[in-house]
Image 1 (cartoon, rainbow, N blue to C red):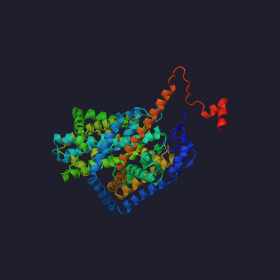
Image 2: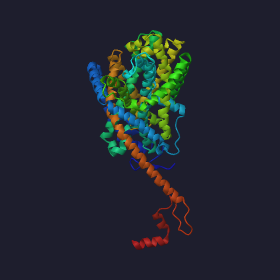
Image 3: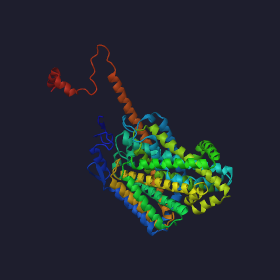
Image 4: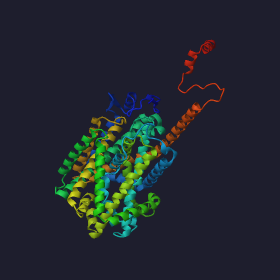
Length: 590
């Protein structure tokens, strides 16, 4: 294939996945890195600033946990209470924006060059999408959130323990885990993928999508600041997932095998998991994460089918069908509901919906960059529909199966199951739920294994994204860089679990830190959408102009008219040199 023009620098770059050697060196220079051979060695500003800020946060949590938790929770509390209207508007905007992109004339544009084909098949692609975007969180909350809302209905819209509360509980879980979060991920992912693969930038840094808005300042302090914010949000988010996954595995080992859930056990779990995800990170993407993601999906589907068979099957199928309709019917009013005149309802929204939206935006750079990395060769329409519909539908099925069974169990135990949830937490409640079904030991072991695989695959994806974003945006960062981030994530999670005495106080503080870091990024995503749309319009006009030129050039000339020079034929200087008459005229004019 012929070389193509790089729109960022007016240089010619090869069409390989990582760009030409010159392109890689330029990316490395912009990110404060140096090149050895074909790979980038991270030594620059973005990496060290990010590590320094993360170290400050961790040291704050170690030496002043009360202050750490109080200050950050206070700031995030202000964000969720005072900026709730901002989150409601921008998340709804992202949903409308990606739907428009998918079904507009831009939907047919390929995220890559015309001859690029997808690197992964549909099932593998979907499996990696799901494990990066939801995975362990869905296992953690699949039973817990519907049961929680069943016993304590949102916004006072139903009486606890009633059929109305059950409908509201599942509808709320659908709302928090389906279209809205995936619209946020798709917005970031499609922007990164378009600039990386269609425009030939080959760069997974978040700052690259702001080039249409701020131009070459992307390569300076402003662009580095955007990347630092994105990396911090990703680092804190993945570290929190690491900590929460550790708590969940520890609770499972305690429940299933009677192993006491101590800080020492949690450190062992982190060490074993870290070795597993760093081993996976040291293998190519199509072998490590791809294998783990597909294995986790097969196991998740197996557990789903089993609990449909042994659970309240008809009730599960009825609730799935009904709640999809209820969810869609209430999507618009629920998307913009703020309970402006009811402080109690507004407080609930801040604690649940707004907090979820802020958390999804905090996870956005990580998930968006990862799904961009695995989506080369797909059209914008295929990308958005796949990212939005596949994981959302699977989440609805998961909540309908496990949430409905959990609600029925709460009815059968006269509310004792929900009391366990409120008192002991979601991790303990999950394994108590499993004890009430046949083959409890086997399903508990399988659920532990599923959590572990989601855990490892998600952390592996975090290593890939952090390595890429901190190494000039290269698509395939060096193994040593990925392992460095893997160690940092494990150390952060371990330190905060130790400081919190095996509880969630320090991890909650880090979650708040991720939300704090991502809040300005969430607001910046709106002009980012404008920049992407502006670029799509400009590129489409340019492609249409070239197509018209090709049509005009290839159209047969009218009889008797002088022949047109062929596209790509000899230049004017060459024609002058070959034609004696033209050479004579040229000399005369001189």
